[in-house]
Length: 112
Length: 112
Image (cartoon, rainbow over all chains, first blue to last red; front, side):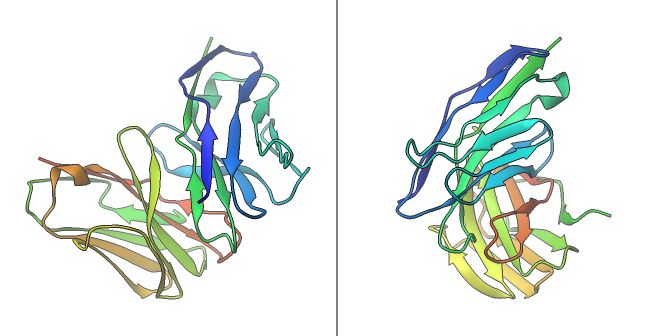
């Protein structure tokens, strides 16, 4: 079956540091890949997505590239802010997109 | 104007009771979901409806019964609550097939 593996958190960074959160996946076909973000006390929000190999999703300074050869979709940001503190979920959908398989989430804490 | 709204936001109840959570979306989407998030933030899909038709029914105890009176509403009724049902339940909606889910703020259920 499909699965998503994310790096364990929490990840603690100083403001303006570079962020990488690793995500790898296992799927039988050609999934679409997503990053969702959950701020404290809120529901998840779509951050970015990529639907085919070599696509790059980007939003709010965050980027992730769909790498089929390494089955990865790592999230990066060049300079994090305190307001980026949240839990980040990698996810995939296959065969129509109705069922998202989520990773376990990675908590990011950004300090001044 | 809240896109996906759930009520109640908090539920505290005794073991053995029955409770319901309601969800409404005003985005015009045709697909709605219930997800369960446990204390470690792990997210698991429970049910999905497309135009009032059940399309995803994961391995969930029969005590959980979803109901979709129309495509803008999806309710969740839970009978004979158990301690292990304590979690945050998220409602979400999307247009079928695009994998871009819009989540409500969650309903935190605590079973004592």
